[in-house]
Length: 253
Length: 286
Image 1 (cartoon, rainbow over the protein chains, first blue to last red):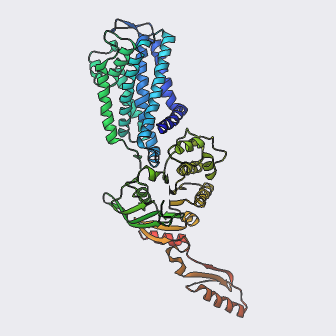
Image 2: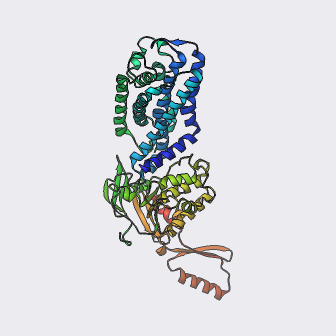
Image 3: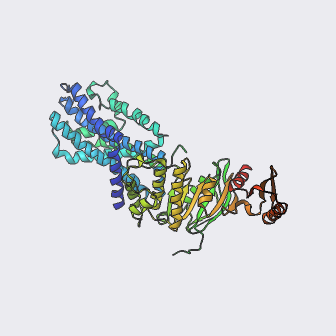
């Protein structure tokens, strides 16, 4: 446990000192929130009894930031560390492998929580979107399931990425279309019929809905079990693939 | 705890194949406590495959291996406490400073050496607060050695520690390795530079085509002692040279005759085949 905290402390240092990581994981979601709110600011979104578009984008950007802090950050940083030989080098020390992985996951979860707080606070201050204090436990539970699942998917994804150069393109090719199809970038009432049905089979849309329900319950309960189940199934699939295909040694040599 | 005189590494009939290619073909090695052992050979000779089997990264196909009394394929955390590894190529985390990189690794070991002590051992005093990404290639490599040294291991593996270095960086890296010997560490070093092996090693094994083709101290490697020495000189404006297996006698006759006749022997020189000559001859056959 002490060893895990030791590892996490250094993973945090490395994360916050890396300008690219901080930009894409922390600043980029904030910039997107500001841009979307500015472009679509005076519109309303159908469904859920008609809400302002700024209210829609707060849980949407929390969704994006969580996926970015977990799946994207892990996939990219683990591939870079693998190809640099750092994973292999760590395996040559007495440190158990699980500590290394757990440290990286802990790092992602810390960043995801920071983003939840940051985006919620910006939504409250800039756009008057109330922070759902009473449903904070539900929100954190959804975040926990989502973060765990997207971490597993991120680790599994490293097996598909052959080199450092390929990391960003592969991650973006998978995630960007899903953000669009899941209504994260474009409000879901603007999307053609069938698109959401398609997106419901992938983990981002159900996670977005679970975050949404915890943040602003529509008609149902704050904790959307059916959505969370889909996310968790993807997470378990990711875990199995990660256990089977994750490698510590560089692909290129 | 363990026998001080027992070999630190002992290898018998070690072999490894990748598909059709026999990368390592029945190698025998013995490394004694406290010595610097150089595993010398050209690129692709099987050096890294061998060292990675000793480090527990790769499984062997045949033979017996004992490193610090254990089989690397089955050894656990306690064994890893006792070894230090520098890989042939590893980029350090560019965002951690020298001191932080060492402190991170220190946390992995039960009784690490103090960070400041290791910083001094690798000659990076004054750079402790510099991020690894800002160090020169040679300095990064020394930090890499420091990270292998932080757990106070008995045995260090250095896989081609100076490949691609400029002469000054090589000298500094050599000083660090010489320092390891003074600390009583056993060092297993792979290299494709003869001068590196000559300069650093107590004993050398030369590998070519997956087999050990020669072994011994750098001085008597390839049986240089028994090979003919070459005596060259200039007499009456004519360059002459001769080979002899009894250089003392031949030289005595030569100079005695010159003194008796009152002639000069200019540029008189006795040379033995250099380690480089031996190395090139041995590895060329493959």
